[in-house]
Amino acid sequence: MQFLDQAKVNVCSGGGGNGCVGFRREKFVEFGGPDGGDGGRGGDIIVECVANLNTLLDYRFRQHFKAKKGGHGMGQNRSGAKGADVVMQVPPGTQILAEDNETLIADLTKPGHRIVLARGGNGGFGNARFKSSTNQAPRHANPGQKGEELVIWLRLKLIADAGLVGLPNAGKSTFLAAVSAAKPKIADYPFTTLHPNLGVVRIDTTDFVLADIPGLIEGAHEGAGIGDRFLGHVERTAVLLHLVDATLDDPADAYRIIRGEIEAYGAGLEDKPEIVALSKADAVPKAELRKKARAVKKAAGREPLILSAVTGEGMPEALRAIAAAIAALKHEKREQERREAGWRP
Image (cartoon, rainbow, N blue to C red; front, side):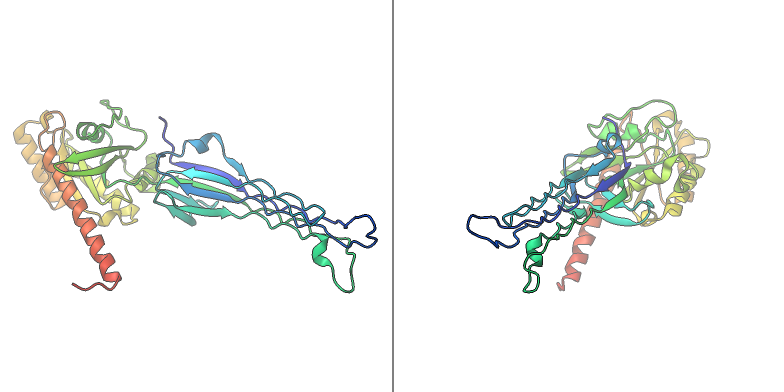
């Protein structure tokens, strides 16, 4: 399945139907009076968050959405029908932005969330509305109101509990494939992963969702290698697992590059709990591995985990550390909600 995390869409709500100019016509009724009905309201453009989607691919092939126009009013005080709404379905984590691609209109994070993006135009009044003591036979009606037209951007930021970050070819996809049923493409060259992947991980009695994003390069926060979009996919995670390739000549420098990009990107990423790990430990001699681990510890300010997705070394410990960080954040969030609700122990 192809993945698309950003799309530009044109939407237009339906215009209202026109009011009717009509007069009552019955046998033996000489002056029946006006009976023109109102026009119907135009259809709305609605965006709905649904659970069974994880890509914006549908909006690659269709970028224009227009709701139906309201029906025109008719004689005998018959109002026009309301125009049919258009419901656009998006995956959880979708942000709706204005045409400038910066102004946030809505952030749909939970299935069932809906927003009326563009309201249909009101129907015009029929001539029966304009009858008065001084004008008992009005011969005019209102036209329907035009619908709203907008250009919007849809941007998907995946919702996961934990995220994998690191330079290209750091072993992120191999890690995800080893701990979940996800089947990302794996090869021995940079940028094998071109779009984010999600996997459900189970350790002991805990389940969580792990996101693997494409490798980041220097300048990612400014859009180099569209890294700013990739970083957006780990904005909502509770913890980051930072994988550093142990086969590199200077893994400490690799750690500093990615950490610098995370801090420059901002959006709260720099404050998230971070677990640092040296990957591909099976491909490095033990003495050299210890030396590189000390260098990474000095750069990161914490002892890195030693991982090998091939042999399984350190994998359970890494997953337990991720699960513990997620549980701690959920507990902190519950306590904060209690305090805001005025709860006291």
